[in-house]
Length: 251
Ligand code: NDP
Ligand code: 8X3
Image (cartoon, rainbow, N blue to C red; front, side):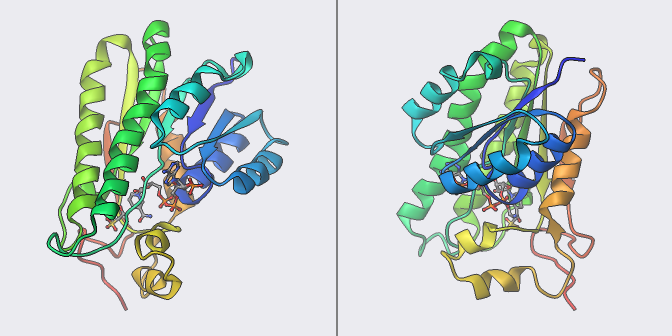
C-alpha cells in the first residue's frame, strides 16, 4: 500500500502537533512546519521512530520562503497527499476602536494570507495528479462574530469562505476539501492571544472540560481516512459545555 504524505502547518504546538502524532501512529509520512526550530527537532526525533519525517522551519507570512521550501522538498517528500492548513492564532481581544493595527496585520497575514500562500504552493501538484486532500482549520469565530473578536473573527470567516471556494474550484480535480471549526480547545492559543499572560489564558479553559488538541486530531484523522468517495465538508466541534461562541456552561 502506498503510504500517504501529509504537510501540517503549525505542527509545533496544540492541534497541529497532536495531528502529527496521530498521523505518525497511522504511518502517514510527515512534513512538519512551524517557526520554532527546537520544537520541530524534538518532534522529528519523537515521530521519526514511527514514520518518515521531514521538518520545514518557516513563517507562513514569508511568501518567498513558503514557495522555496515547498518547491525544494527532497524527491521522496515532493508528493503531498494531505495538506493540513492549521497554523494560525489570535492576537488581542479588544473592541474595534481600541484594537492594535499590528495585531490586525498579524491575524490577517497569518490566518488568511499565510494559508493562501501554503495552499498555492501545494495545490498545483494535487491538480496535476487529480487527487489530494486539504483540511482547513477554521473556528467557531469563522461562523459567529463575538464581542472584541472582530479581526480574528474576520480572518476565520475568510478561512470559511476560502474553504468553500477551494471546494468549488477544486471539485473537478477530485481534490477533497474539509474545514473544521472548533470552539474552545485548550492549547497555547489563549497564551498567544493574551501575549504570554498564562494566568489569563488559563481562565478561558477553567470551570468546564475544554476540548483538547487530541480531540481535534482524532477528527482530522477520521476525515482524511474516509473512503475516496466521502468528504466531510464542514464541521463545528464544541466542548459539551459550549453552546455558541459566547455561551459556555462554567461551574
Ligand atoms: P497553538 O498556539 O497551540 O498552535 C498554533 C500553531 O501555529 C503553532 O504550531 C505555531 O507554531 C503555528 N504558527 C503560528 N504563527 C505562525 C506563523 N506566522 N508561521 C508559521 N506557523 C505559525 O494553537 P492551536 O493549536 O489551538 O491552533 C491551531 C489552529 O486552530 C489555529 O488556526 C487556530 O486559529 C485554530 N483554532 C483554535 C482554537 C482553540 O480554541 N485553541 C479553536 C478554533 C480554531 P510556531 O509558533 O512554532 O510557528
Ligand atoms: C478559537 C476559538 O472562540 O476563541 O478560534 O474564537 S474562539
